[in-house]
Image 1 (cartoon, rainbow, N blue to C red):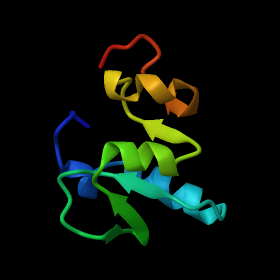
Image 2: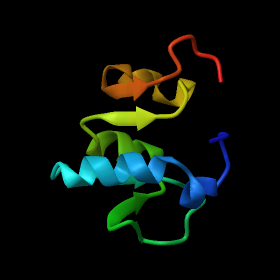
Image 3: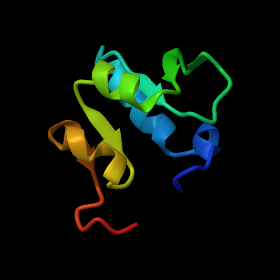
Image 4: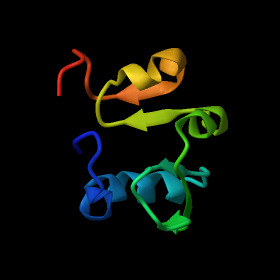
Length: 83
């Protein structure tokens, strides 16, 4: 997804979320554009600092400077820092 977009409701990330949930892992979603409190039964967090504090692992579609301080928690397919 593009940074700043709110199309996660139709995104393939839903499949990833469902697979993680099926393994019994608690999932929280960072999405500042979402007005809902939950999505797919997961808490939606709008504040990035709170999200980073709550997360043991962060699955990100793309590398982001906003996550550089928690790089050890970030898993992304964006190995070259390119979208």
